[in-house]
Image 1 (cartoon, protein in one colour):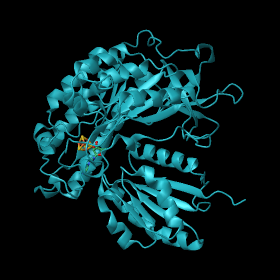
Image 2: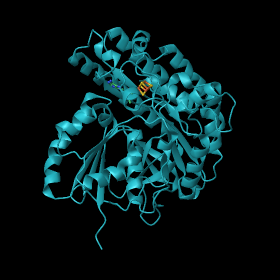
Image 3: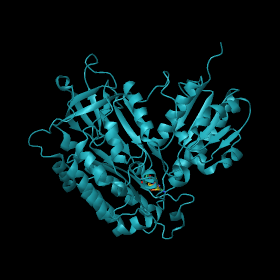
Image 4: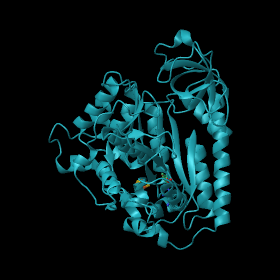
Length: 484
Ligand code: 5AD
Ligand code: SF4
């Protein structure tokens, strides 16, 4: 019998891309492929690309040079290019790179098995057409051979695309128009994941909390399946076996009262929100077309903390947006302090094709943008460390994911606040990945917490009160702000 063809997928970019890779891998398993251990072992390679910033896009071009030799090394090998660069550049990639067999966009994942077969027959394929049909969300259940990167955790797509058109962002052009998946299909997928041992889900969408808004507008109150985001969260929280729910990434303007309240009411909803703000200057936010000002963001953070006092807020920030003055940048630093971000991702502005900001004048000189990035990251590092230190002496609950990057037999996982926690314990008492364990935080580092396993408390300790005298987490976060 011929051995199965083996695939390898290289992924760049956001969690949506990581999840798209998982969908394609699962689909290939269902079509008789096996996962390769590495590139050497593979017959089919797919590069799932990102174009959010120029640097990410260039990775594809440097990869493809090396891959020409990889393909030539063994007959029968094929290369596919997926993701946002594929969607953006389309036939250019096929034209420029003869080693590429197929190029497919973000709406065409389901076509991978047929494109791979066509490649085996010597045909090259381009599929970057937009597909507004809900069918594009339909994927088979997890194949027995599909290995999740993190046991007990899964991503679930609830909406795709973005209609916000922030002036710097390429995503509305690569991911297309907003489309929400029917609630019943989402609940069915989550139920199926729960029966396979999944305890934590992360709901995905480019503007995840805009879920259902177009459907609700079109047919208000119609159809049992037309629900808003908070109502969806409530349904998913009721699925037996699901203990943690996260979502990413929300947009500040789509937090209605129901969603804020859900943070106070749903025990399954983790006390962490990744809430991109991009800038703390009203003038910059206006030119970014974010549709809210800095004070509205501060007010939202307050509302969320009133509902859930220990909420950890993290964010995305851009420095060096065209026209950003020293005072604008100061306003960003001030917002970071005021809100007390526990962590953030920060980027230098990168002009992207098809976006209005790419035509804006007043570019910030590269050295100035670099300086601002470093200042912002230094502030954030100090805040993150102060937050981590405030957690020392408290107990938390960790969903174990596997061996820690720190090595030395340590395991790592995340707590409800999405902080990485490294744990050491004797191998014979360490529960396997996928277990939810109670942990005493004993040390803080800039990137993670260090904890010891508290086996006696390991049954359902997630919502233990904070240690006596530590004050509420709200106060702790504020003290981080003061200390930052
Ligand atoms: N330049 C720099 N950063 C960007 N982001 C999106 N577009 C750009 C760009 N053109 C950042 C935003 C977004 C995150 C995913 O990437 O902060 O929230
Ligand atoms: Fe990009 Fe703005 Fe849409 Fe986020 S909301 S994906 S930043 S256009």
